[in-house]
Image (cartoon, rainbow, N blue to C red; front, side, top):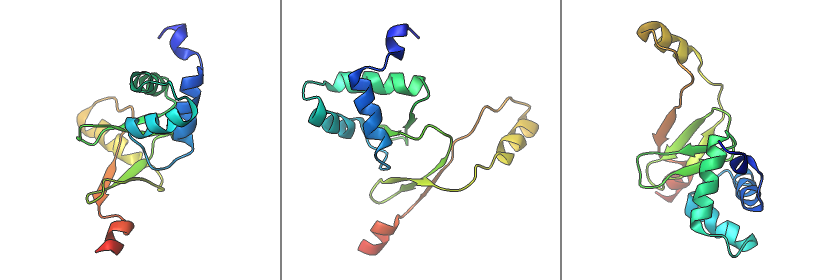
Length: 131
């Protein structure tokens, strides 16, 4: 990674601030719309470029659930997510990481496990109330 990528530019700072101040796991388009409120001249390409750099630096997580777009998480620590199958909302699941799973995979397969990611799927409380 070049030194240029590690600089905290105004654009990168605004994008990171947007992510740290929301728990909605927004898309790049949402981040772009929010960033334009502060930096009207920012481009969508700049947003995507900075999201990539922030992800590479371990500042944010990129969550891809097989759809055509990713969602981004301002909490870079490993944690679980719940994905609503009706509205697509992504929420953090506040439970302790099950590191024993990593040990089981390591023992069963003889591989070096660096971590794991786990998502739960179902209907969120907002969608349950709507039905």
